[in-house]
Length: 93
Image (cartoon, rainbow, N blue to C red):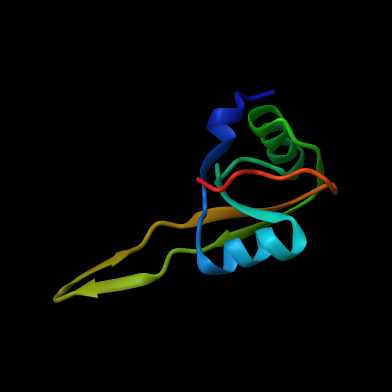
């Protein structure tokens, strides 16, 4: 298995993410592009010492951006929504 810190890149703290955490016991993470659901669940359990119930992963493609004559792309990213089992929680940083 890969190192858990290379799988989870950062926790996403946003208004929608905090609503999900308080209401549904779900947390948002930026994850490595090569990570799958099993690796994400393993990493969350090892780093935060909690039990994971389910993981959903979404790919967010980069968007084209223009600055004058030059055209570029924003970076693509991969996010994971991790739902924890009851009586488990993660402290938001």
